[in-house]
Image (cartoon, rainbow, N blue to C red):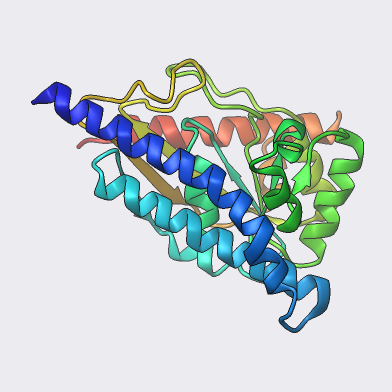
Length: 263
């Protein structure tokens, strides 16, 4: 029975991954062009594309939950919906491949940064370009593009680590998120993600599923400004480096505090 359950979950995951890839091709060829007929010009079209993506990712997560692959537990998620139309920089740790699907499904009209390989991927490239997501191909231009998007009022999702965390490894943030926060002046929305047991990790394969599924816990912490985080750092030195250090310490402390809390 355990083997049958395992194969069932692998089948559900394979179905969802195939649906996302083929669905992307279908959307680019049919749905997204049709959305151009609505009002608002290019900006309106982009908002409608993001709404379709949000609905689609919510459906995928629902199928994964129905299939016993995962369970999403939300804490203070109402803070994410409240970020719509505000220059909010959403920063999250990155334990699981599915993190971005969950965040885009929960945050209205959100932008995200995608790797250059995804930007030109035949299955996903047309989707991310139509949604107005940002490519990381040029790091210098990316900072200003992200700051401009935040100033325009679009919530922006960033994983400061730049890649998924290896299970049990300490957090190590890159400076890009700090540079964007300082350049934009946007409030920071910290998101704590916990995956128990580890699944869809950087070192694992998509078909290696926990015996009884896994739980992805998403906790939205209160908004915080870069200035408040920098208050505990030295007044001298390179601000992006200091803010990166402060963010790393904040996330590490919050996550470790949860692990020490009594059940």
